[in-house]
Length: 397
Ligand SMILES: Cc1ncc(COP(=O)(O)O)c(C=O)c1O
Image (cartoon, rainbow, N blue to C red; front, side):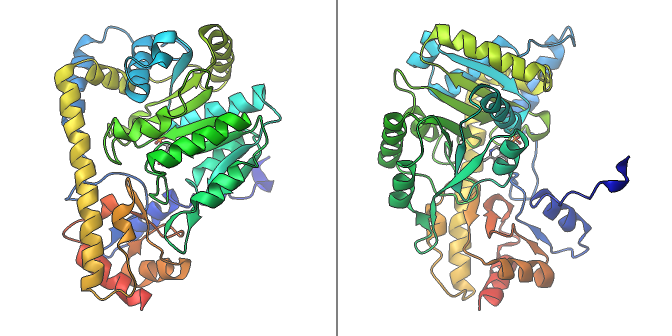
């Protein structure tokens, strides 16, 4: 039966990690996959998570199933973090939040929901976007289209083009936006621009879907939610796909959440019934452990403070590496102005390196970067920055 099956293409980002692991060069550098690394190149378990794990394990009395949308305490904690504790969306009960296996699970539940309940809607995404976005929605059977986002001439946001194209999206379609720390470009709209985007979306009757995978990695935990909250005024409907893989370092525990915000609490109950059906026929109910850690941390003032400090440390290290990268590129004589890297937000930077230059960095210098030129800034350290910048200077020259 399996003889006629062709091999699937290697995943562009995870395939790079495989190639990196197989490389025998002791000075190899991996700037591919989106995982935070500390100055020693490690991705340790955060202190708040270590403490929460002890408490969760000590208090656990059963491994019985969770409800289809996960534990209600987790959903409440997610809503508080994303929308703000006293936000009308939270107090009115018009948001339904389900715990999903990671942000990817949240996106897939969204895709299945759109296909099943709004079958004629297309989903528009930014060009570029996270490589898995089009693949997830294609797998769910949702038609996808693109909106211009990146301006290669300025290494910035092509805002006017983006807004004009948004103004042409048909009513009833959905638009997938990155709530903060746009992956792969690192370029986020300003608050003023978010306001304009939200206004066009509202006036055209488009459904916004916010992918919110990096809360706290841009400017701050509250500040990073400001764009998303522009879509949250009374009467707005939206979907938020969140992930705690990065900001809690819970990658392998698969902790994410999808929130469907309806016009009122009655409509929310109907939407919830459809979301639960979607989940039941996919993975039935979520894994418990990672979400219990998040709930424990966000439910304890001391642990929350510790976690916020840990997120700030990660953010500060990334921003420090951005500055160091720009300075070292100049020091090593790389032609061009790279100061735009300092303006970008989150873990990634669109370096402006071409596919050929990325290929040469891999072949000649054992430096692994995604083909689009996206660099994981968290993979840079004081130890490897000189090797990296001298190699970039060589291939760019
Ligand atoms: C933009 C974006 N969305 C969602 C995710 C999904 O993260 P996870 O499924 O690991 O929680 C990622 C992970 O890299 C991402 O970059």
